[in-house]
Structures are given as structure tokens and as C-alpha cells.
Image (cartoon, rainbow, N blue to C red; front, top):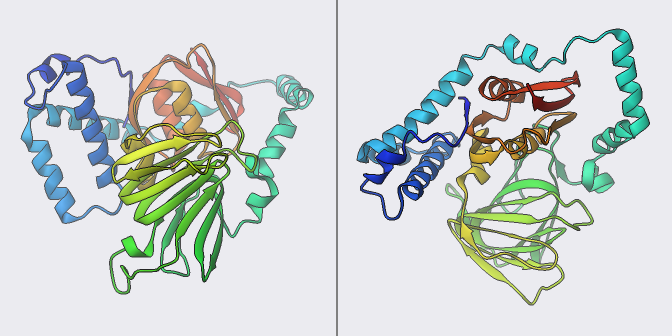
Length: 356
């Protein structure tokens, strides 16, 4: 695995001759990359079946452009594996400072209120006390799967808190903050699965409501309890869901499998094709294609303690790659080797990517 600037043009000419080409070479290449991302996410999810692997093989052998796209992922993964653990750690160490400089830096943090901000984060982030008291919660970098009373499965991603309420009239999840995968009992396979439960299955976030229609889907909300200025993003993997914004429940939008949409308290955006990267966390990876470095850093920051930021001078660098979420030190080490950036800060718990 490595991180590559996404403006590489090595496949542009070849994509123009691809039998899957329907519009421009650039659009054909982008579509093939998205297909490769979707396959990579599926095969790394832990849920891939023999049928999935056979289907991937057919896709891989269907055209040289598919093989070219897949070789990028092989190269990315190989480079990551070649980054020694001690190199990842040393790359992220702040430059050596005298005792006086370190103390001066700590004094600046205290004076700026940054320590108070970190304490706020440790005390529960945007979700506050309710997040800490939630029925189920995960810490930084943790993933957890639980089976609910009705047989449904709930998977919590990093920094997530959920309350569960089940009574004779409804099944309700309240997502305080974070990201979840829901597999309703009706959508599961195996003994006892698939049985109809007449009670509606709903997920509430600070931005609105999601009604499951016998399904498998992900929900992400970072708005905290207030919900102002934040979005909920829903991606449907199986069957369908219906979403409603909090302040306008008369409006609703149905999403089918393979679609995603975002909404806030006041409205929602139209449905669009689901981005495979949205669910790549289920396989322990962050898969990006042409993301701004600032956005990659913001996403990696969700999986590591402390503060991780990006200097505006390098925020616009475009990144494509597959990054391990369980070892963000290694992910950052690869970024610093592939781009003209370095990690600067007092320690690994307070880092900023800055120009070299």
C-alpha cells in the first residue's frame, strides 16, 4: 500500500480503448477505479464468499484495464508491507527539541486553550455525557459488533455511541455520534434469521430519522447532540431505507440498495450511487480515490488518539490509496514518503502534516 497523487495519467490513453468505455477516457478510467475499489473493499471485508472471489476473477480477467487498476492496489499494499514498524514510528516523531522548547510549546498549548479542547474530546467529544452513558459505545480505533434482542446485528465503528430501545411497538436505535452498520434480523442468513418482525426498525440521529425496510445499511453522523451544521450519511447495501429530516418530517426519500444520500435537520440531497469507500472501514481499511490530503487526514484522525491536522499549504494535494485503519502511524509514514510533507508536533498525539 502506498499513497499516490491521483493525477497519474498512465491509464488515460488505454482507458480510451477499453470496451467498457461509454463516454470519455477519463470517465472510463474513473469508473474502472471505482469498480476496483468496490472489489477491494468487498474482498477485504471478511464477508467475501467463494462466489464473490470467482466474480472478482471474472472481472479481473475481462480486460487489461481492470488488471492495470488492480495492479495499483497490489503495489499499494506491497509498499505498505515494506514500511518497517520502527520506521513508521520514527517518521512520526517530532523533531528533537530541547527541554526549554518543549516546555514553551506546552505553555503555548495551555495559553491557547488547546488542552481544554483535548480534555473536551476525551470527555466524550461532541456527544458529551450522553455518549459516555450510551448503551453501546466504542473508543478511538475500536470496532465492535453486538447482537440485539430481536436478532439484528449492530456494528459500531470508531468513536461511536448508540442507545437501543425495543418495546412491543418499535425497535429504535439512537445514534448519538459516530458510524454504524445495521443488519436487521430479516436481512441475516442462518438458523432463525429471516423471520418477519412487524415492529418498525428505526435509527434516529441528531439530523433526522431512518426507517429500515428489511435491510443492511450504514449510518454516519458527526453532529453530536445538537445536530446543527452537520450531516447524516446513509448508504444502503441491501434492500431499502427511508430517510426523513428532523425539521421537515413531511419530506422523505427512499434509498435502494447501491444508493446513498446525506441529510441534515432541514433537508436532504438527492440519492446517488453509493461510494464503496464509505463502507471500506468494515474491512479495516480507508480506501480513497482522488481525495484531498486534508480529507484523508481528517478521516485518519478519527482512528487515533490526540490531534491530527493538515497545514493549509498542503491540504489540496490529491491522494489515492488504501490505508490501514488499525495502524495509522504506518499510514502517515507512507504519506510522508509519497508526498512532500512531514509530520511535525510535540508528540504522536499532537501532529500536523506540513510542507517539507
